[in-house]
Figure 1 (tube, rainbow, N blue to C red):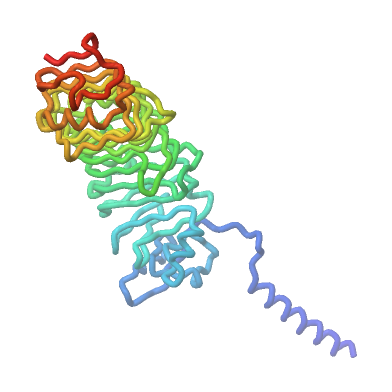
Figure 2 (tube, rainbow, N blue to C red; figure 1 turned 180 degrees about the vertical axis):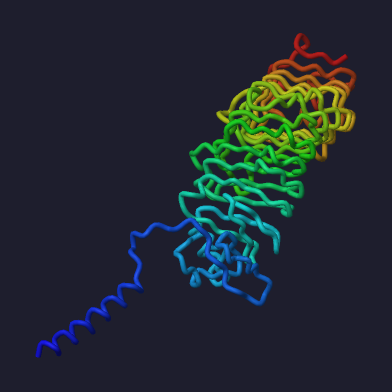
Length: 380
């Protein structure tokens, strides 16, 4: 009897022990280390024997150590991306090192990261031409080691805005030509080593990303040609007068007291739209002989000055909801001048300098301006 009871007890213990071995506690933290990849026949990296490499071919179902830095589940990519804290997009077949661990993207060129250990990213890689980092929990991104082949970098939030400060050290980037920063409160952004930077996006318009900056330091050798900013930028944050190669400037929701581009002799396009807080500002565009498009939307300019702009086009410029207190247009294409006069609020203009266009006060295009008279209008 005792022998049967002991045998039965032993069987029950073995069954319970085996069952418990197959379960994980629901409270077990997500491990930050990547999984060793499963061998595949379709080009996925299988250099995972040291546990420091993961690949996009690795499925979460093969994750033997509970890690969640799986580079991608090819069967549920959308679900993985929505659940990931950080999503990285890299070109097909390329690898990247993050916090001293190397990752290869899945077939959709994605790498998914999850966990508190990925709020700070130290990034390196000598064979990566482009990189897109998307996430809401970042506090620091460091690229200190030289990434000579990287020419395009995007760091954006997944949400429209993340009320969190993101510190950047991009000192290892010298060949980047296109940079996008959006959706975070960025501290000082030092671009001084980016001598090849051609286009700069400070915030995004589509999809909209609310973005703030403490200060942006231009490249020492400044070759920026295009700027698109959707951010309440001020004169203290960026120096618009030190952009010698600038061709296009699109400023959405700015907070400048004055906008001018003193050194931008190649300037062709200026767009200003919906200043933050409906802030009034001066817009002075002097000596830009290639200027062809000045488009303003929802702005009140205390002073609008355009001089030496013989190519300003009435066809390309678009002005909507524009009020100007003082207007000076000298050496500007006549059709462009007419377009400005036809587009601004006629009850707002209080002073005008419009020499040598053959205009007559009270006659189109100078008709209907309620505050203009011979004492505040210069026509010769």
